Amino acid sequence: MNPIPGSYLRTLTPPVLAGEGEQVSAATLSYFGTNVARRLGLTPAALRARLGDAPFVTALMDTPLGCTAIFTLPLTYRDMVRDDATTVHYAQAAIAQARAMGAGHVSLAGLLASATGYGRLLDAPDGTLTTGHATTVAAIVRTVEHVLDVSARHWAHEAVTVLGLGSIGQATVTATLATLGAPRRLVLSDLPGKRAAVEQFADRLRQERPGLDVAVADATAPGGHGHRAGLVIGCTSTPNALDVDRLAPGCIIVDDSVPHCFDVGRAYARVDAAADLLLANGGLLALAEPFPVRSYAPPLLHELGWNAGVHHDRTITSCILSPLLMAAEPELPATLGMGVPVPTVVANLAVLDRLAVTAPPIRCAGRAPDAAYLARFAERFGTAPAADPPARAPGAVTAAGPAAPNH
Image: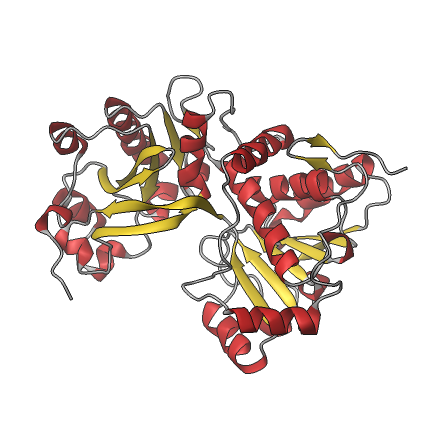
């Protein structure tokens, strides 16, 4: 194995980058995974001190749409939940640093959006800051279309469970209904404490779409009908809310949850034994051409497996792509607050199509099914000839506008 150049094993700060002449057109704010300080035998405060008590840059992505920087706040999600004032302090510092490097648009990765009031607690010029959720929902829509197509399945024939009805979950429901039409059945599943809010959302859907078959399920109930779906879309922050042992054979999971909404080890044990599940990440997209990613890691974090060095990729997370899309398409609106308007998702879908950005190859938790697995899965669990185009319900909205009426 070739040694990693020392230039990639460092705590890379924006002033250092500025001195090296680095400029970016966009940026994304991220944060630590869980238990980073504990794994290093440090307190959170001691770890922050070792890292300069400031945000630092962990990647520069030189994409065809421009260069974007990934800033990491020296906080875990638990830290952010416990102390929103500290979260805002570090986020504001990162926004200022990103703008000093030339970033015109900045997004919030993962759970940082909810920890900052979906961006409302932060101060940035109008149109600069975005949760990136509209692009994430667009990525989920494109991934759902792709996995159904590969599996010889049609949205209109599916019993669909959406697990987690927060900002992205609700937007995924409304966007898929608007762009793909109504599925055969829709189940809205969340924790018992959110039942009243989910029931209100279901009532609104029934009023807006008479005839829609929609039900509400408790995500934790043994044998609940949320687990009987042919397609599960995960949008929750609750780990292992989905019991893979109770899923029907042929179930497809498109998961944008952080962490995953199911036990990955048990899911792949079932894949290896029965070959009757299809697992896909939900929040990724693929650019038309590979691009270089320069990853930087402080030495103590590299010991924990943080990437350092250069690699090339086509795949990019939707929240990282979002500010790049805004830089490329100035009319594309930012998303702030919990709601994600359907027209904004549709606008993102149109931009993705125009820029030849597609759903990525099917992959989840570092594993990808091979062509033989996908072919067998479609043969066993497909509901339509593989050559048929995915069906869209009459009146469904496409990225180009309303579908032509049937005559």
